[in-house]
Length: 419
Image 1 (cartoon, rainbow, N blue to C red):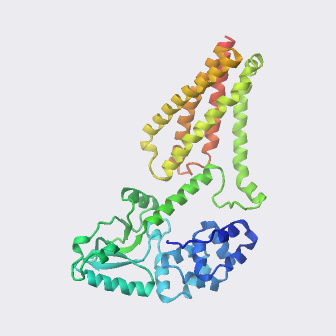
Image 2: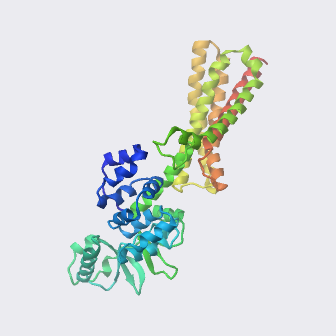
Protein backbone atom coordinates (compact mmCIF):
# COMPACT_ATOMS: atom_id res chain seq x y z
CA UNK A 1 0.00 0.00 0.00
CA UNK A 2 1.62 3.20 -1.19
CA UNK A 3 0.32 6.06 0.93
CA UNK A 4 0.62 9.76 0.12
CA UNK A 5 2.20 12.09 2.64
CA UNK A 6 -0.36 13.08 5.25
CA UNK A 7 -0.59 16.40 7.08
CA UNK A 8 0.77 15.95 10.61
CA UNK A 9 -1.72 18.42 12.07
CA UNK A 10 -4.64 16.34 10.80
CA UNK A 11 -3.15 13.19 12.27
CA UNK A 12 -2.67 14.86 15.66
CA UNK A 13 -6.29 16.00 15.72
CA UNK A 14 -7.53 12.50 14.84
CA UNK A 15 -5.43 10.99 17.63
CA UNK A 16 -6.11 13.59 20.30
CA UNK A 17 -9.84 14.29 19.79
CA UNK A 18 -11.81 11.02 20.03
CA UNK A 19 -15.19 12.78 20.15
CA UNK A 20 -14.35 15.00 17.18
CA UNK A 21 -12.71 12.35 14.99
CA UNK A 22 -15.55 11.99 12.48
CA UNK A 23 -15.83 15.78 12.10
CA UNK A 24 -12.07 16.23 11.69
CA UNK A 25 -11.92 13.36 9.20
CA UNK A 26 -14.74 14.79 7.07
CA UNK A 27 -12.76 18.04 6.74
CA UNK A 28 -10.02 16.12 4.89
CA UNK A 29 -10.41 16.30 1.07
CA UNK A 30 -12.11 13.12 -0.13
CA UNK A 31 -9.19 12.24 -2.43
CA UNK A 32 -6.92 12.08 0.65
CA UNK A 33 -9.26 10.44 3.17
CA UNK A 34 -8.32 6.90 2.21
CA UNK A 35 -4.62 7.62 2.57
CA UNK A 36 -5.24 9.21 5.98
CA UNK A 37 -7.02 6.03 7.11
CA UNK A 38 -4.19 3.84 5.82
CA UNK A 39 -1.71 5.81 7.92
CA UNK A 40 -3.64 5.00 11.13
CA UNK A 41 -3.73 1.85 13.23
CA UNK A 42 -6.19 -0.91 12.34
CA UNK A 43 -8.16 -0.19 15.49
CA UNK A 44 -8.44 3.52 14.74
CA UNK A 45 -9.45 2.80 11.13
CA UNK A 46 -12.35 0.73 12.43
CA UNK A 47 -13.46 3.48 14.82
CA UNK A 48 -13.56 6.10 12.06
CA UNK A 49 -15.17 3.88 9.42
CA UNK A 50 -17.90 2.96 11.89
CA UNK A 51 -18.91 6.64 12.11
CA UNK A 52 -18.96 7.21 8.33
CA UNK A 53 -21.97 6.68 6.09
CA UNK A 54 -21.76 4.00 3.41
CA UNK A 55 -21.64 6.58 0.61
CA UNK A 56 -18.76 8.40 2.33
CA UNK A 57 -16.77 5.16 2.42
CA UNK A 58 -17.59 4.47 -1.25
CA UNK A 59 -16.39 7.94 -2.21
CA UNK A 60 -13.00 7.64 -0.49
CA UNK A 61 -12.40 4.10 -1.81
CA UNK A 62 -12.54 5.41 -5.39
CA UNK A 63 -9.12 7.00 -4.93
CA UNK A 64 -7.43 3.81 -3.69
CA UNK A 65 -6.14 0.81 -5.56
CA UNK A 66 -8.01 -2.51 -5.02
CA UNK A 67 -5.56 -3.87 -2.44
CA UNK A 68 -5.80 -0.68 -0.35
CA UNK A 69 -9.59 -0.67 -0.63
CA UNK A 70 -9.69 -4.32 0.42
CA UNK A 71 -7.48 -3.62 3.43
CA UNK A 72 -9.86 -0.92 4.68
CA UNK A 73 -12.99 -2.95 3.99
CA UNK A 74 -11.72 -5.68 6.30
CA UNK A 75 -12.40 -3.22 9.16
CA UNK A 76 -16.08 -2.93 8.18
CA UNK A 77 -18.86 -5.31 9.28
CA UNK A 78 -19.86 -8.01 6.79
CA UNK A 79 -23.30 -6.53 6.27
CA UNK A 80 -21.96 -3.04 5.45
CA UNK A 81 -19.14 -4.49 3.38
CA UNK A 82 -21.56 -6.23 0.99
CA UNK A 83 -23.62 -3.06 0.53
CA UNK A 84 -20.52 -0.95 -0.14
CA UNK A 85 -18.98 -3.41 -2.63
CA UNK A 86 -22.13 -3.45 -4.78
CA UNK A 87 -21.81 0.33 -5.25
CA UNK A 88 -18.16 0.29 -6.38
CA UNK A 89 -17.22 0.60 -10.05
CA UNK A 90 -17.20 -2.76 -11.84
CA UNK A 91 -13.42 -2.84 -12.33
CA UNK A 92 -12.66 -2.14 -8.66
CA UNK A 93 -15.54 -4.33 -7.44
CA UNK A 94 -14.28 -7.43 -9.24
CA UNK A 95 -10.76 -7.03 -7.88
CA UNK A 96 -11.92 -6.30 -4.33
CA UNK A 97 -14.24 -9.32 -4.34
CA UNK A 98 -11.33 -11.40 -5.62
CA UNK A 99 -8.96 -10.20 -2.87
CA UNK A 100 -11.55 -10.63 -0.12
CA UNK A 101 -11.76 -14.34 -0.91
CA UNK A 102 -8.38 -14.88 0.71
CA UNK A 103 -7.32 -15.13 4.33
CA UNK A 104 -5.83 -11.73 5.31
CA UNK A 105 -3.15 -13.51 7.37
CA UNK A 106 -1.72 -15.29 4.32
CA UNK A 107 0.41 -14.30 1.34
CA UNK A 108 -2.74 -13.67 -0.72
CA UNK A 109 -3.99 -11.30 1.97
CA UNK A 110 -0.91 -9.12 1.44
CA UNK A 111 -0.84 -9.12 -2.35
CA UNK A 112 -1.42 -6.29 -4.80
CA UNK A 113 -2.89 -6.58 -8.31
CA UNK A 114 -0.78 -3.80 -9.82
CA UNK A 115 1.06 -5.92 -12.39
CA UNK A 116 0.99 -7.01 -16.03
CA UNK A 117 2.12 -10.31 -17.54
CA UNK A 118 4.43 -10.19 -20.57
CA UNK A 119 5.70 -13.11 -22.64
CA UNK A 120 9.49 -13.50 -22.73
CA UNK A 121 9.55 -13.09 -26.53
CA UNK A 122 7.95 -9.63 -26.37
CA UNK A 123 9.93 -6.63 -27.64
CA UNK A 124 10.64 -3.49 -25.61
CA UNK A 125 8.38 -1.46 -27.93
CA UNK A 126 5.47 -3.84 -27.33
CA UNK A 127 6.04 -3.74 -23.58
CA UNK A 128 6.12 0.07 -23.62
CA UNK A 129 2.77 0.14 -25.47
CA UNK A 130 1.16 -2.25 -22.95
CA UNK A 131 2.51 -0.26 -20.01
CA UNK A 132 1.27 3.00 -21.53
CA UNK A 133 -2.25 1.62 -21.90
CA UNK A 134 -2.17 0.28 -18.33
CA UNK A 135 -1.02 3.65 -16.97
CA UNK A 136 -3.76 5.46 -18.91
CA UNK A 137 -6.40 3.16 -17.45
CA UNK A 138 -5.16 3.02 -13.83
CA UNK A 139 -2.83 6.03 -13.40
CA UNK A 140 -0.22 3.61 -12.00
CA UNK A 141 3.00 2.15 -13.35
CA UNK A 142 2.73 -1.66 -13.10
CA UNK A 143 5.16 -4.35 -12.08
CA UNK A 144 6.19 -6.07 -15.31
CA UNK A 145 6.15 -9.84 -14.77
CA UNK A 146 7.66 -12.00 -17.49
CA UNK A 147 6.11 -15.40 -18.19
CA UNK A 148 6.58 -18.39 -20.46
CA UNK A 149 3.45 -20.43 -21.22
CA UNK A 150 1.78 -18.66 -18.30
CA UNK A 151 4.50 -19.56 -15.75
CA UNK A 152 6.61 -16.96 -13.99
CA UNK A 153 10.17 -16.38 -15.21
CA UNK A 154 10.91 -13.12 -13.39
CA UNK A 155 10.41 -9.39 -13.83
CA UNK A 156 11.48 -6.72 -16.25
CA UNK A 157 12.55 -3.65 -14.29
CA UNK A 158 10.77 -0.50 -15.42
CA UNK A 159 13.96 1.47 -16.04
CA UNK A 160 14.96 -1.07 -18.70
CA UNK A 161 12.34 0.48 -20.99
CA UNK A 162 14.40 3.69 -21.16
CA UNK A 163 17.74 2.09 -22.07
CA UNK A 164 16.95 -0.42 -24.83
CA UNK A 165 15.89 -0.24 -28.46
CA UNK A 166 12.24 -0.71 -29.40
CA UNK A 167 12.60 -3.90 -31.44
CA UNK A 168 14.95 -5.66 -29.02
CA UNK A 169 13.55 -8.69 -27.17
CA UNK A 170 13.30 -8.55 -23.40
CA UNK A 171 14.40 -12.14 -22.67
CA UNK A 172 18.01 -11.16 -21.87
CA UNK A 173 16.95 -8.64 -19.23
CA UNK A 174 14.73 -10.77 -17.03
CA UNK A 175 15.47 -10.50 -13.32
CA UNK A 176 14.62 -13.45 -11.08
CA UNK A 177 11.89 -12.87 -8.50
CA UNK A 178 11.01 -14.97 -5.43
CA UNK A 179 7.55 -16.52 -5.38
CA UNK A 180 5.28 -18.05 -2.77
CA UNK A 181 1.97 -19.94 -2.78
CA UNK A 182 -1.11 -17.92 -1.91
CA UNK A 183 -1.97 -19.86 1.26
CA UNK A 184 1.42 -19.55 2.97
CA UNK A 185 1.45 -17.73 6.31
CA UNK A 186 2.68 -14.20 7.01
CA UNK A 187 5.64 -15.77 8.82
CA UNK A 188 6.65 -17.63 5.67
CA UNK A 189 6.33 -14.44 3.63
CA UNK A 190 8.62 -12.59 6.07
CA UNK A 191 11.12 -15.50 6.06
CA UNK A 192 11.24 -15.47 2.25
CA UNK A 193 11.66 -11.69 2.20
CA UNK A 194 14.56 -11.92 4.63
CA UNK A 195 16.32 -14.25 2.20
CA UNK A 196 15.54 -11.89 -0.69
CA UNK A 197 15.62 -8.35 0.74
CA UNK A 198 14.55 -5.40 -1.41
CA UNK A 199 12.61 -7.69 -3.78
CA UNK A 200 8.92 -7.97 -4.52
CA UNK A 201 7.39 -11.41 -3.98
CA UNK A 202 5.06 -12.96 -6.54
CA UNK A 203 2.03 -14.85 -5.20
CA UNK A 204 1.15 -18.02 -7.08
CA UNK A 205 -1.97 -20.17 -7.22
CA UNK A 206 -1.86 -23.94 -6.70
CA UNK A 207 -1.34 -24.42 -10.46
CA UNK A 208 1.64 -21.97 -10.35
CA UNK A 209 -0.25 -19.25 -12.22
CA UNK A 210 0.24 -15.67 -11.00
CA UNK A 211 -2.32 -14.29 -8.54
CA UNK A 212 -0.65 -11.07 -7.43
CA UNK A 213 2.49 -9.41 -6.12
CA UNK A 214 3.59 -8.32 -2.65
CA UNK A 215 5.56 -5.10 -2.43
CA UNK A 216 8.63 -5.10 -0.19
CA UNK A 217 7.33 -1.99 1.58
CA UNK A 218 4.17 -3.87 2.59
CA UNK A 219 6.28 -6.65 4.10
CA UNK A 220 8.26 -4.08 6.06
CA UNK A 221 4.98 -2.62 7.35
CA UNK A 222 3.93 -6.13 8.40
CA UNK A 223 7.18 -6.58 10.33
CA UNK A 224 6.65 -3.18 11.98
CA UNK A 225 3.09 -4.08 12.99
CA UNK A 226 4.25 -7.37 14.49
CA UNK A 227 7.00 -5.59 16.41
CA UNK A 228 4.48 -3.03 17.61
CA UNK A 229 2.23 -5.78 18.94
CA UNK A 230 5.15 -7.30 20.83
CA UNK A 231 6.13 -3.92 22.29
CA UNK A 232 2.56 -3.20 23.40
CA UNK A 233 2.33 -6.56 25.10
CA UNK A 234 5.83 -6.12 26.49
CA UNK A 235 4.56 -3.15 28.49
CA UNK A 236 1.37 -4.92 29.57
CA UNK A 237 -0.75 -2.65 27.34
CA UNK A 238 -3.41 -3.85 24.93
CA UNK A 239 -2.57 -3.23 21.28
CA UNK A 240 -5.89 -1.46 20.66
CA UNK A 241 -5.38 1.01 23.53
CA UNK A 242 -5.13 4.52 22.19
CA UNK A 243 -2.79 7.09 23.71
CA UNK A 244 -5.71 9.47 24.29
CA UNK A 245 -8.19 6.93 25.70
CA UNK A 246 -10.03 7.98 28.92
CA UNK A 247 -8.49 7.01 32.25
CA UNK A 248 -11.11 4.31 32.98
CA UNK A 249 -10.42 2.61 29.64
CA UNK A 250 -6.71 2.54 30.44
CA UNK A 251 -7.45 1.09 33.89
CA UNK A 252 -9.58 -1.65 32.34
CA UNK A 253 -6.80 -2.59 29.93
CA UNK A 254 -4.02 -2.69 32.53
CA UNK A 255 -5.28 -3.59 36.00
CA UNK A 256 -4.99 -7.38 35.56
CA UNK A 257 -1.29 -7.17 34.76
CA UNK A 258 -0.67 -4.93 37.74
CA UNK A 259 -2.50 -7.33 40.08
CA UNK A 260 -0.38 -10.23 38.80
CA UNK A 261 2.71 -8.09 39.33
CA UNK A 262 1.55 -7.32 42.89
CA UNK A 263 1.17 -11.04 43.60
CA UNK A 264 4.70 -11.78 42.49
CA UNK A 265 5.99 -8.86 44.57
CA UNK A 266 4.59 -10.61 47.67
CA UNK A 267 6.69 -13.65 46.76
CA UNK A 268 9.84 -11.52 46.80
CA UNK A 269 8.73 -9.99 50.11
CA UNK A 270 8.32 -13.49 51.55
CA UNK A 271 11.91 -14.35 50.66
CA UNK A 272 13.09 -11.19 52.42
CA UNK A 273 11.05 -12.07 55.51
CA UNK A 274 12.92 -15.39 55.83
CA UNK A 275 16.10 -13.41 56.52
CA UNK A 276 14.55 -10.91 58.91
CA UNK A 277 17.06 -11.67 61.68
CA UNK A 278 20.00 -11.20 59.33
CA UNK A 279 18.70 -7.82 58.14
CA UNK A 280 18.02 -6.73 61.74
CA UNK A 281 21.57 -7.65 62.73
CA UNK A 282 23.16 -5.98 59.70
CA UNK A 283 21.02 -2.98 58.72
CA UNK A 284 23.42 -2.04 55.93
CA UNK A 285 22.12 -5.01 53.94
CA UNK A 286 18.84 -3.15 53.43
CA UNK A 287 20.75 -0.37 51.65
CA UNK A 288 22.17 -2.74 49.03
CA UNK A 289 19.10 -4.93 48.48
CA UNK A 290 17.40 -2.54 45.97
CA UNK A 291 20.68 -2.28 44.05
CA UNK A 292 20.99 -6.05 43.59
CA UNK A 293 17.32 -6.45 42.66
CA UNK A 294 17.21 -3.37 40.41
CA UNK A 295 20.31 -4.33 38.44
CA UNK A 296 18.92 -7.83 37.90
CA UNK A 297 15.58 -6.47 36.69
CA UNK A 298 17.23 -4.02 34.31
CA UNK A 299 19.56 -6.66 32.88
CA UNK A 300 16.63 -9.04 32.39
CA UNK A 301 14.65 -6.36 30.58
CA UNK A 302 17.60 -5.66 28.26
CA UNK A 303 17.83 -9.34 27.37
CA UNK A 304 14.07 -9.56 26.93
CA UNK A 305 14.03 -6.63 24.51
CA UNK A 306 16.68 -8.30 22.32
CA UNK A 307 14.91 -11.68 22.34
CA UNK A 308 11.46 -10.18 21.64
CA UNK A 309 12.92 -8.30 18.67
CA UNK A 310 14.55 -11.53 17.47
CA UNK A 311 11.22 -13.36 17.74
CA UNK A 312 9.36 -10.59 15.94
CA UNK A 313 11.87 -10.70 13.08
CA UNK A 314 11.90 -14.54 13.05
CA UNK A 315 15.62 -14.69 13.86
CA UNK A 316 15.27 -17.03 16.82
CA UNK A 317 13.10 -19.97 17.86
CA UNK A 318 13.06 -22.41 20.78
CA UNK A 319 14.95 -25.27 19.13
CA UNK A 320 17.85 -23.05 18.05
CA UNK A 321 18.04 -20.94 21.21
CA UNK A 322 20.82 -22.76 23.08
CA UNK A 323 23.57 -20.47 21.78
CA UNK A 324 21.50 -17.35 22.57
CA UNK A 325 20.87 -18.51 26.15
CA UNK A 326 24.56 -19.26 26.72
CA UNK A 327 25.64 -15.91 25.25
CA UNK A 328 23.14 -13.96 27.35
CA UNK A 329 24.19 -15.75 30.55
CA UNK A 330 27.85 -15.18 29.74
CA UNK A 331 27.16 -11.49 29.04
CA UNK A 332 25.31 -11.35 32.37
CA UNK A 333 28.28 -12.88 34.19
CA UNK A 334 30.74 -10.39 32.66
CA UNK A 335 28.45 -7.42 33.36
CA UNK A 336 27.97 -8.81 36.86
CA UNK A 337 31.71 -8.83 37.47
CA UNK A 338 32.05 -5.25 36.18
CA UNK A 339 29.14 -3.82 38.16
CA UNK A 340 29.71 -6.07 41.16
CA UNK A 341 33.29 -4.81 41.40
CA UNK A 342 32.06 -1.21 41.40
CA UNK A 343 29.51 -1.90 44.15
CA UNK A 344 32.09 -3.86 46.18
CA UNK A 345 34.49 -0.93 45.92
CA UNK A 346 31.76 1.47 47.10
CA UNK A 347 30.99 -0.81 50.07
CA UNK A 348 34.68 -0.95 50.96
CA UNK A 349 35.16 2.80 50.56
CA UNK A 350 32.11 4.06 52.45
CA UNK A 351 31.25 1.20 54.82
CA UNK A 352 34.76 -0.11 55.53
CA UNK A 353 33.52 -3.67 55.04
CA UNK A 354 35.43 -5.87 52.56
CA UNK A 355 33.18 -8.82 53.44
CA UNK A 356 30.00 -6.85 52.65
CA UNK A 357 31.57 -5.78 49.35
CA UNK A 358 32.34 -9.43 48.52
CA UNK A 359 28.77 -10.50 49.31
CA UNK A 360 27.24 -7.73 47.18
CA UNK A 361 29.65 -8.43 44.31
CA UNK A 362 28.93 -12.17 44.24
CA UNK A 363 25.17 -11.57 44.48
CA UNK A 364 25.38 -9.13 41.59
CA UNK A 365 27.18 -11.65 39.35
CA UNK A 366 24.73 -14.44 40.15
CA UNK A 367 21.67 -12.23 39.67
CA UNK A 368 22.78 -10.93 36.27
CA UNK A 369 23.42 -14.51 35.11
CA UNK A 370 19.90 -15.37 36.28
CA UNK A 371 18.58 -12.31 34.45
CA UNK A 372 20.26 -13.44 31.23
CA UNK A 373 18.77 -16.92 31.54
CA UNK A 374 15.19 -15.89 32.37
CA UNK A 375 15.26 -12.92 30.01
CA UNK A 376 15.88 -15.39 27.19
CA UNK A 377 13.94 -18.46 28.25
CA UNK A 378 10.63 -16.82 29.32
CA UNK A 379 9.67 -15.33 25.91
CA UNK A 380 10.90 -18.49 24.14
CA UNK A 381 8.79 -20.77 26.33
CA UNK A 382 5.72 -18.59 25.84
CA UNK A 383 6.25 -18.63 22.08
CA UNK A 384 6.58 -22.42 22.19
CA UNK A 385 3.28 -22.64 24.10
CA UNK A 386 1.58 -20.53 21.45
CA UNK A 387 1.28 -17.46 23.68
CA UNK A 388 2.33 -13.88 23.07
CA UNK A 389 6.09 -14.04 23.74
CA UNK A 390 6.15 -10.76 25.64
CA UNK A 391 2.72 -10.47 27.24
CA UNK A 392 3.80 -11.29 30.81
CA UNK A 393 7.55 -11.74 30.42
CA UNK A 394 8.53 -8.68 32.43
CA UNK A 395 6.54 -9.90 35.42
CA UNK A 396 8.14 -13.35 35.45
CA UNK A 397 11.64 -12.01 34.84
CA UNK A 398 11.36 -9.37 37.57
CA UNK A 399 10.05 -12.02 39.96
CA UNK A 400 12.95 -14.35 39.14
CA UNK A 401 15.61 -11.67 39.59
CA UNK A 402 14.03 -10.29 42.78
CA UNK A 403 13.49 -13.67 44.43
CA UNK A 404 16.81 -15.19 43.36
CA UNK A 405 18.73 -11.95 43.93
CA UNK A 406 17.40 -11.50 47.46
CA UNK A 407 17.89 -15.18 48.28
CA UNK A 408 21.53 -15.24 47.10
CA UNK A 409 22.38 -11.87 48.66
CA UNK A 410 20.75 -12.49 52.03
CA UNK A 411 21.70 -16.16 52.05
CA UNK A 412 25.38 -15.30 51.58
CA UNK A 413 25.10 -12.61 54.23
CA UNK A 414 23.58 -15.08 56.72
CA UNK A 415 26.30 -17.64 55.99
CA UNK A 416 29.32 -15.28 56.02
CA UNK A 417 28.28 -12.61 58.51
CA UNK A 418 26.41 -14.74 61.04
CA UNK A 419 28.21 -18.04 60.58
